[in-house]
Figure 1 (cartoon, helix red, strand yellow):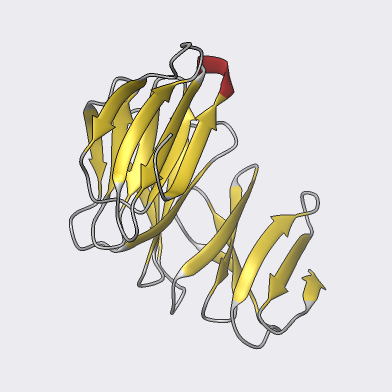
Figure 2 (cartoon, rainbow, N blue to C red; figure 1 turned 120 degrees about the vertical axis):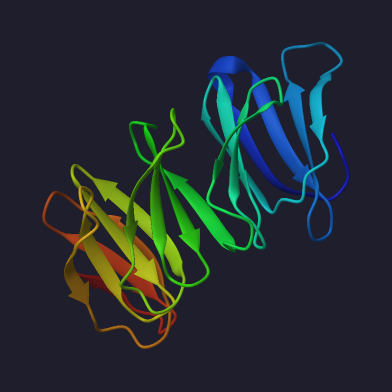
Amino acid sequence: FHFLTGWFSWFADALHLVTVSGEVTGTVRLWQADHPEHDVVAALDVSTEGVKFIDAKQFVTWSFGGAAQLWTIDGKKSFLLGTQGDFVQNVTLSPDKKNLLIFLNNGVGQLWESQSGKLLTEFQDHDKRILAASWRNNYLATASADGTARVWALNGGEALLVLHGHTGYVYGVQWQDDRHLMTYGEDGTVRSW
């Protein structure tokens, strides 16, 4: 494997590993783990900060200064999600792997269909970047650097609830069941909603 690996994603069913190396932005390498030499299937010279498998056929990379890019397992570009200058901070995948949520630096979350590359909706009410998300049925919960957590309707992007109570960043959010959330924040507290 290569030096200074910063991000990696493993897809065990397909026996593939994707790594990103470099000090700031790096080279993406797709490895075939079941080969005796652990051969590199593809080396992609792209500026990226993160990588995540979607399924056995595709993965996504993203860059703080650009858009997210969907790739096929053989290293070919499939769909560009967004535009250069979007400042993608992170990407999370829905449990059914049909949708991707892209976190932009300006607090917007974009919901994309992973198979078609179609923008489904935007979640626009956070004042600062989204730091985490949790999916539950037809709802999405987000945690933000603006000190709030929000619950959204997936169809339409409407904020249904705004949860205030943390002082500072809200680092994480997780559904407990269909009606209750847990959040944790910079203030050192964990809250149940």
